Amino acid sequence: MKNQPSVLAIMAHPDDAELKCFGTLCKYADSGYKCILLIACSGENGISLIDREKFNINRIPKNVRFNETERAFSGTGISIKFLELEDGSAKFGRDLIVAIEKEIRKISPEIIITHYVDYIGADHQDHSEVGKSVINCVTRLSFIKKVMLCEPLMTLRANLFLIVLLI
Ligand SMILES: [Zn+2]
Image 1 (tube, rainbow, N blue to C red):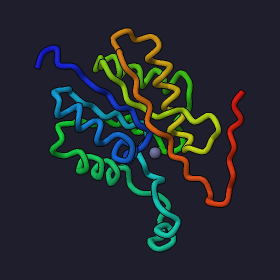
Image 2 (image 1 turned 30 degrees about the horizontal axis):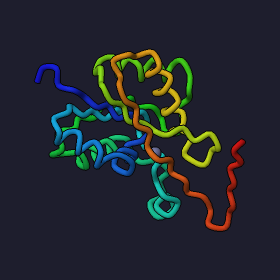
Image 3 (image 1 turned 120 degrees about the vertical axis):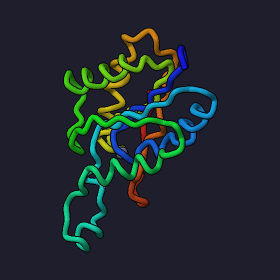
Image 4 (image 1 turned 45 degrees about the vertical axis):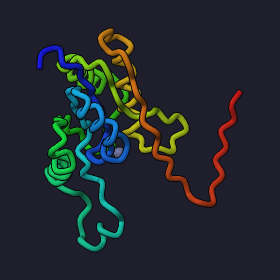
């Protein structure tokens, strides 16, 4: 469809969009938007400590994570692209900004969905690095009309008090 409005979600890991914005993307897709998911890292470190010991492995082959994500989004009409960075290697800077901006410019979305940038460091570092890089890009790209930031993953220990002082 020509002039079809589009939404681009840019997430750090293969399971992030399912956890943070799957419903939102599906609603946009159902409303006639072209929806694309760009995933920066490959998810190869996404394995529990229990499974590491049980199966004696430290990493999951990246094609396993890619296939899981494609299965999760099958039937939604949402397409998926992978930058294939190593887990934990996303760094705010020229390389990541250029790679993300190149993909944004190819798609020219009106709406961007990405990670909220967690400056206190409770969220996964890849999430914040990707979020910062995306925000850096959108400040220059006038075709983007709306940026939606997903809620950060705050998995703090149950008995830890974290107090943010605002001035
Ligand atoms: Zn993640």
